[in-house]
Length: 573
Image (tube, rainbow, N blue to C red; front, side, top):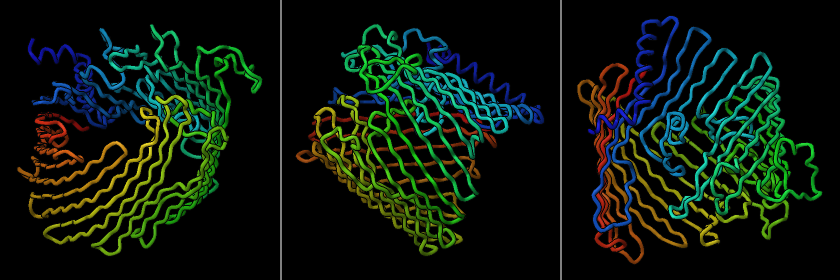
């Protein structure tokens, strides 16, 4: 069976969809007054191969043959009805956390997290969605967990109602020999009701429930417990004036850490009223969180204050991770001065950890970030940024415990010269990053420090199709386990042919990496990319990349050559 036949068999569903969309496009173009299609669709093919010498542990980074169909568009029927849709399909057999599904049918293929498929019929104030989507209710209920299922948002007048239901995690059988810990199938359902406007002043009651299916696996994973929880949060957002806004949310959560735990309960809380909608046992706990934010914004100045409390046992069930057991006080600022030549925005505040006093350590620290862009002259500008960020999830199990603090600083002066013939730009970036993280394997804190110096030079000609860029980078990365120095230099050349219908680009880099006690590793990479405009809204892209790695004494005699060919056809509407 040849490669093309295999492609037809494995990708029959994508080809049918592509055929349908092409016919819809033709019909839409012939019926412009009633039916319109806006967006893009692309079909691509990647071929990957590698040649390896003296490196038995090397694993290919990509599949040998990868076909992909991508589409993001909206189909309009008349003035009020539309169907936004998104498609991202491939013949990739597995993802990082989901093994290959045996005898995968059309339904399992569509809902597999390696793909992404959704269509969202909308009529005036009614918005529905089917397929992969992320319900976003509020900061303490739901906002970053993608589910495969269905949802609806309606907002007639000042009435608000939303509902969502779907699968957020598929069952994965544990397999210790393949280092697959396993996972229970997990469902999410949520609802929101209130008054006001979804994009404006409103008062809503938000409820989200997440539940693991204890019967979804043949054997229970070691160290992973089935969970169930609900988050309930009244939320108020008020635009007092065009400039003054208030946001306030109070949330409560009941979370059961282990659905298989004993049913005996203590007397700390009375769960009788909610035991009918969530499993309650001796691993269940109740806690609270709230946030209050008020801000004032004008055309050039913005100031706000925020207070946030998250209890040690609070679980925002519609988010993957949330730091708990904290109190934050923040001042938020946003300044645009001197005709936007001076732009400053950021926040500064105080964070108190371990407010419950349940741990041995308790600390207070200043948290914040600042970004500054200053245009001193027409030629010279300066960009400065600093951030201090910390995260702790208070999980006791080492596998799931997250605790980290990050400090980051960067400074970039830029000098630019532009005239009728050409534009030149020179920039220099220096940065410093310090990252401290709890390591589950060593059960201790590891600190990583990174220092970087980078320079870039770019020149382009107004009356010529030629442009090129040079860059160089030096970085030192040191930690308790390993220290690395890296030197990198590269060249980017570009030229346009046939009245800019054909755009070509050649990108090459050389990298040297040094480890203490070893001779350096060398890497030489090339990439040639061409884009040809077949029609006004049709592009054909082809690129070839080659990565050549030659290791030093860290891996004696090891060499790797990787080749990747990419072809893509894109149609815009």
